[in-house]
Image (cartoon, rainbow, N blue to C red; front, side, top):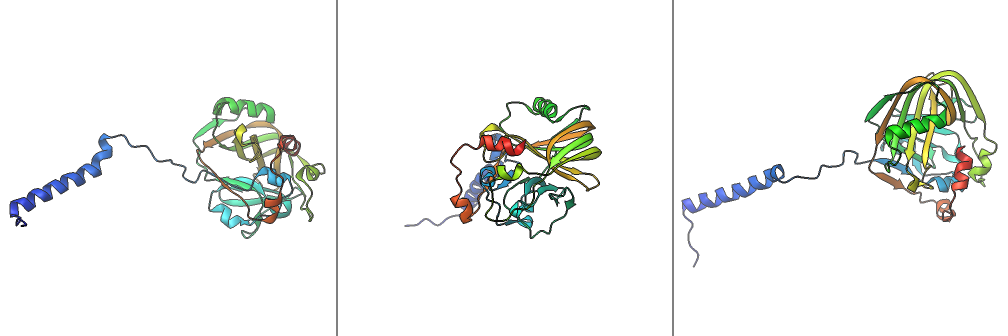
Length: 273
């Protein structure tokens, strides 16, 4: 037979249940809990550099979709129509004439990497550095053996900046190494502007550029492009490290058919020089 519960039995059970609930709520105050990642999205990348080298120049992602994943980054546009800079949530397109345009958000990209940029560390930019010396200097600041993706943002003044862009291509698309043999290059004197891009670890070679990949945009929005070299006068350098890389691969037949198995590092060096 079931025993009828008395009032004090019910009160004792309620007190016991309340104690269990309080223990569950406050348990992480006495037992260390793992801190959540602050960069849930991390670096978002659409397609791979190897696919771009093989001539996969048409993608499905729009700039509007890309911007949902970050406000800072670099890439290119469908048909390889110039260099992309995403800065403070605004897209800029440096075409083969060296001029800067603002593309509509329905424009599509075959390759891009973006992040929500929050400066974690900031340093003064020394004067008199060329690109190679700058990389060595920043490697020391960041940590030469760092295995994390690092977004790099420079607000600088430069004695000179050398950039390039690429002209829009027509199908059947040539490989990127062929396109860059005939790339327009630009020498910009005494200018102020931003450098936007990433330093990526060696194990990401082929997925993206291992090492530094930066694009330039002048403060007056008159010129820019893929960075080849510069000479610094002054400014600031900001970085943010990310612990996640989200790789979004195209569903196109061109991507599925591309030869991505072979080591393309010689081609990467050729197109990034």
